[in-house]
Length: 75
Image (cartoon, rainbow, N blue to C red; front, side, top):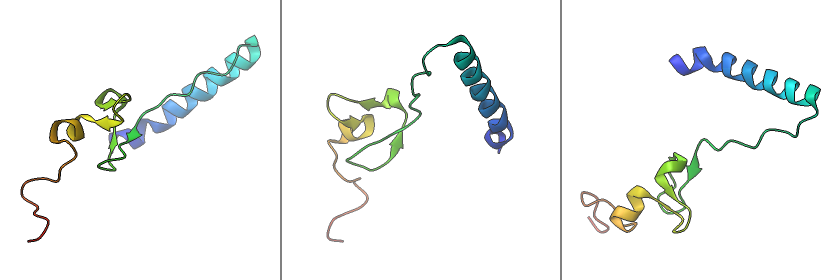
């Protein structure tokens, strides 16, 4: 719930930054990536937990994209 309270501040800061960049004639700010979707487990993970070379998150790398042990395929 704390994030929603501060969301307007973040949006206002980004709008102010964009206005300053336009006024100074600077190029647009680079896009910020907050989450990446892992193609193996289909979870949204932080960029630091995602390996771009192997295209998998840390959890998938550790488990080799196998399902959890408590969930069997047949029963």
